[in-house]
Image (cartoon, rainbow, N blue to C red):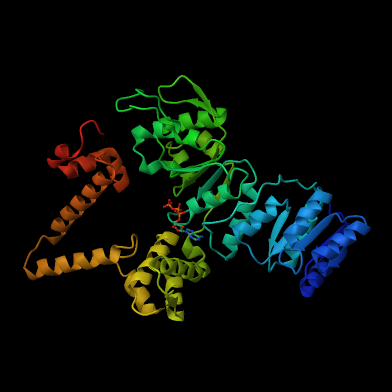
Length: 474
Ligand SMILES: Nc1ncnc2c1ncn2[C@@H]1O[C@H](COP(=O)(O)OP(=O)(O)OP(=O)(O)O)[C@@H](O)[C@H]1O
């Protein structure tokens, strides 16, 4: 039942917003008063009974809507406040929810939605939200499409709640950035954010990575190691690629999540932790559960709330904005003037399919910033940078392509026939050497980093393998 006759206040310096919202609410049966500033609303509050619901804009001359929210929450903690703003970034939505906003309404909004929201709000009692210190925002999530605005609202709201969150979405859609935003805007912001990519750690090391081990717990464990759970105490643990977690470890993780305590590997001391777990995956976990490869009970525990990140091709209007931001970041890093995209380039970017999502776009922009001649980037430059073989990864890809093409041309000119086999062998060698160097000779880790099985890596290493890996390493 809508509480008809309830008092609703609308605070906005924009007369037309005030007018149309007040009219729509009045038509729905509410008693509406409009105010053009925070000061006017506060003054009225000192003189008459408070309303049952208040809508406020954020940016207004004088004190802004968030200050008004703060004052209202101090004076009338139970009064639900709906914050309206054209700025739907995470910092704004989180700021509003942190200040105790009941809801966040992105402008421009549909009047019917606003009225429905008022009705919903006035039905049950409003939920008070704990206040926390404001934290600076970095790693801004960019996006202005409806899907992203919805996501930002959800992040703002969820950051305050001590719930586990599961983030789904294709590779490169920004899952880690969302996890960081959830942490940054949460009451845990001053404690650590610890990330672990399940797929990047060899399965035999995962348990000790997560829970730590005591000295001598297994061969090679010379010193006590504090696991990620302990490192994240009081903060947030981000478990990326959770779908890759082996079943036995899923069982252990489930137990730890249920009990908030565990033993280090080989340890006797019971470790208690207070950790919020945010997990992410690009896989369909429900399908993995159906196939018996992921525990249903673990999924339920991680998936208290699910945030889905749309693929970039589902929000094409964000592409030019993201591209501008990446070009600006690249220019800053190169200490060079910012390159601009002309209309053709923007359209070419918008219509690309982006299998690698935002990461692919980011890499492309860095290539364009480094390689496109001139300060204005045209459709031709974009097309060249998008040409096959250059799409997915890495700022050095263009140089690599050029070197490979030169090599191929040379061999073809020399009349050679089995170029592909030769190229593959070189590719394997270069990748393996780089990965082994990176991991200090640890083969399992090198294989995981390359996305190869350990047996495949050993096969590729061939006879040279035994000479290369260090004694005692795995
Ligand atoms: N909305 C966004 N605004 C700005 N940058 C973004 C956005 N989404 C993603 N990025 C950038 O794209 C890159 C990939 O993002 P991120 O690592 O969060 O993706 P992911 O979904 O976790 O990828 P994966 O599944 O491969 O781990 C990062 O450099 C990130 O900063």
